[in-house]
Length: 281
Image (cartoon, rainbow, N blue to C red; front, top):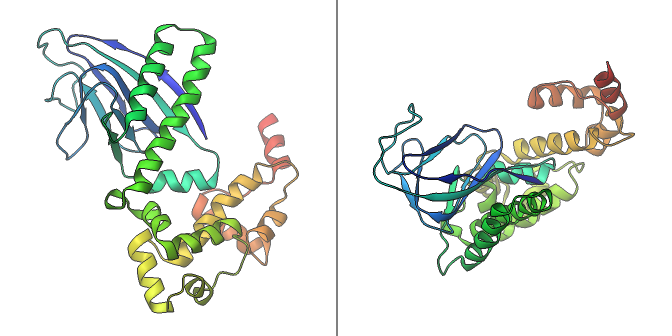
């Protein structure tokens, strides 16, 4: 997991922060003042000092000084002196586990710096102080603290079953969580429907329906997608050939692995040495 603070704006008057639809997860920590978070087809959400807005990859959003905002405009009529300080950053991952978990998060999560999340207030004050005194050392510290923000979001979701969905909800489920841990640890196992159902201590029919209702896809589709994410990670490692990665991920032939990889990833798998040579040319 990698995080980086890309903006630390001091805002006043009629202001707007719009990062569009990023392929990365984005966060905005309001360290002082007030702001409104806007998303498509939802009512704007008021943010207070210390509040954190986390936007999953692909989610359009904007922050403004006022509750009314247009998606197409980049400035709004002024309404007095409204001041706000933000710490904005993005989060990226290069690990299949984090990538899968990020993809399962709600499109937007807002954590309020109230009694339920007192750690946000302290973290916000620290990040605000580091942002005020700009230096390379402070920038590095801000990036590391940004990673802590993501962990706070994940902890909140895992602790609140009513807000959980997809993979997060499955990890909370004792039976599905046990199965997912086993699949993640050893994707090369055959993982038949019967074997997965037995590990989850359910009948095949009940397990298949429960898994699909919770995760949003069939057990076989999930295992296959997880294998491809694991394969992408392995192919970036020195000395890993396509044939070896195919074996680790549970495919009997390299041809079968290549076919699935191309279909799900959209490109042909390439071993580490070959990809490095291609980059040099």
